[in-house]
View 1 (cartoon, helix red, strand yellow):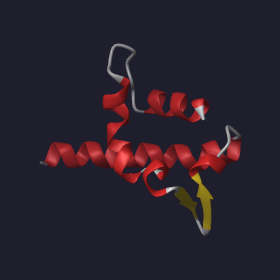
View 2 (cartoon, helix red, strand yellow):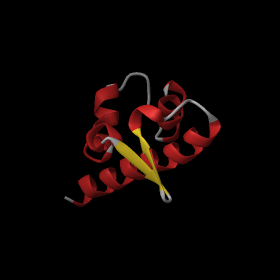
View 3 (cartoon, rainbow, N blue to C red):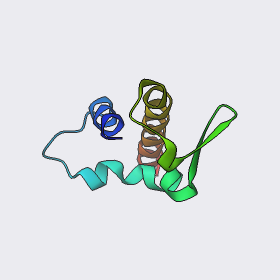
View 4 (cartoon, rainbow, N blue to C red):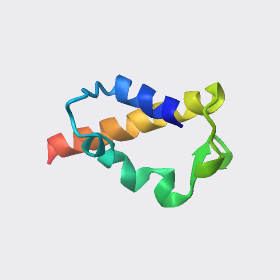
Length: 78
């Protein structure tokens, strides 16, 4: 899923000098790596069933960006 990660990093404005783990850390508690599946509408998909195809990217990328932005907003509010 390198296409999704590359697109995600571009959307959040990741700079090459930043630490990648720090940029991805907000996703960990809510990612399918923790819960074993993503749910898109009524369709559950195991994390390892996702592919680097347009349908999967177009459904996963907005979810990752939303999770990252929510985490950022919560950290600013705290």
